[in-house]
Image 1 (cartoon, rainbow, N blue to C red):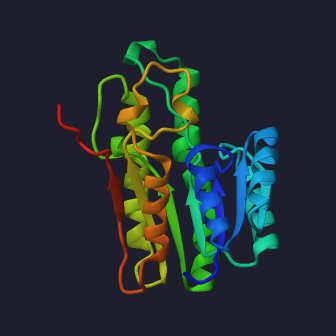
Image 2 (image 1 turned 90 degrees about the horizontal axis):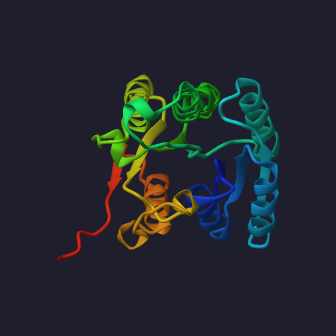
Length: 233
């Protein structure tokens, strides 16, 4: 893969950070965002020890912050070849247990955050005549589960948004896809009563993102669903 300029939201930890680290080590120039300044600074120290990395503190829920982050990314990178819209949050429980604040936070982060970034990225990439956008969704954007009503709803909304945008981008040279993993062993599950041995490794998802970034001009992958290996009883 030729050297690329890459933007990753939610890039200070978990899937976002490991994606950034993988691409930095491969010689690409990476720009990450995170709403947490201290986590952002800590991640950048690690990334810069391996290659070229930049960052900007911004909350994907805030249109003004997203605009500032996008403008800074363009200033630093020039063009954007690959954007990984990875920032996300999830709460699980029976429907009656959720607060309105938890509902708003999930939709504003998982759905509105993707919408705001797409509004900036799509026009830029259309002007460039090429570009790949990858949205980190979930297998729960393709199916449902008990205790996941709001999270599943956000990811189903993301799938619908991306599906529509794909149709809008026909003939432009710009591609958008989702990567849909099952549960991934990341700090997101730290402190929770879960069996991480049955989860995906974070690099399984990174490799899916890399596959999308590396696809040929003649293909336009819509989504990649990644599930952990089914182990015999």
